Image (cartoon, rainbow, N blue to C red):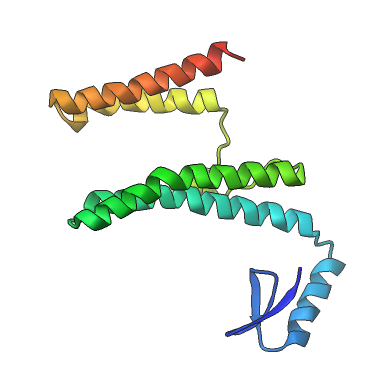
Length: 163
């Protein structure tokens, strides 16, 4: 990883620093390599954190979109959350294709996908089924929940039978 001078000091790569001197940054880098550090393993951790952060930002921005009272902010945030997941997915797939590695190390704060997709989506379906009546008894809202259930059922079908 490169040693870089930034406003707040010297950095080894993007996440190690700041150090007061270039010599100190180099010393830390040498020590890391001497103790078995491999750049590839760090890349896997960084890319998982990067993709997780982008995907998580879609959820956070979606909450902000629902809370704002400004129409222009509402629309700007909508454009972001509607596109960021696809953008992050494209980056992840390109990274995996170019490196020949699957991203496995997503930070647990982003719900590290330890379960199989079918198991996870089945648990989400059960959650929606159990809690839907607590949300609202308005038919239009229940209709939207039905649309989510349809999406879940369709995805579960595909994961079960279209292998």
